[in-house]
Image (cartoon, rainbow, N blue to C red; front, top):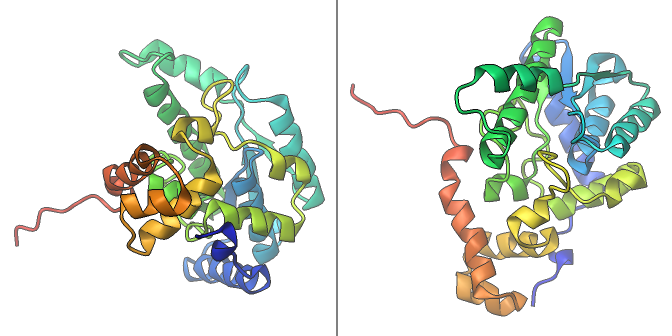
Length: 264
């Protein structure tokens, strides 16, 4: 059997490595700080917390980008309270009016098409993050974790279009460990992860499985176990395992730079 404890990290050892990674890359790029898009979720909260520890609040720009009638008020409040704890003023940009303009001018824009309209929201938020980054000579921090990256649960050129991903080699389970260690507000830790593309949207509903089980599947997959072995070890249906490993293969293009045809 395999258990979540097998995935555990030593937060005391990991924290300074993340902080050094952020500091070194900002320094090498000759930039003045970092921009973090904060949603009220655990990944962005941990990223923000560690970025502030690395650079100081005066060198970090926090932005939250709610959508009217979609983003829960609780998320906005959680962001503001966490930023206050970190001595940060959070910039708020309501993306609703921009989405309305896009809907009026973009051919075949359909809000009911959840894939297309959801990705537009993610890419729009990244445009806004880079607007701040360019103005203030700062680097855009990514908030994705290893679980999201392997399963392709991110938007190409949206939340995946960033400069640094300090949490990119940590499973979702590890993010929870770090959040507890950093004393992130419990409201944020306990919240069901969601991309926030439409009301009631959650990661686990879309992925068809809870994150703990997905993390264990990915852990065994990385160790070279096949689908049948993973199914047997975790007592999970073969269909569930295949749905996750198929995602890994299908989303390979999202994890790499555009392929180049070499002609020289």
